[in-house]
Image (cartoon, rainbow, N blue to C red):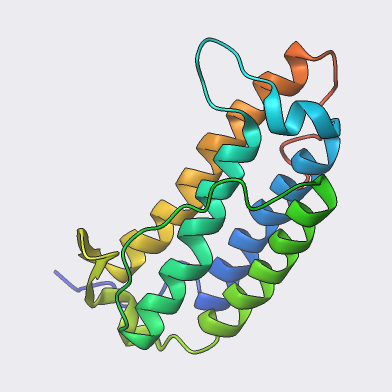
Length: 160
């Protein structure tokens, strides 16, 4: 049996897909009223800001670690933002961090093992897919919050 060696998706297409998700998540952040972004929760879940802080603590720092090999423990910064504008500025800055480090990944690197944050030992591609999956998961929680607040969230299929 012949082994399939062709890529299903190129690194460039994966980055575009990821950045499409990030653009949609940004629009979800924008949709929140300022106070509710910081305080609103349902059923004991965290406010959406805390979920955003988790996403910010994972994607850029995780990708930097993958590229540089410099392992740092996972650190989610609490209370670093005072306004929604600050959150959005940080989101945009991390988007550029992701673009910069992703450009430094060779195709071979995707299959190397990486002990992300010193505790999640998986191939790089699985780390990257986790970054995207985690964002989708938390963005969905943001959709629930927005709907509970009577706000129609952005269409989930409009990622670009």
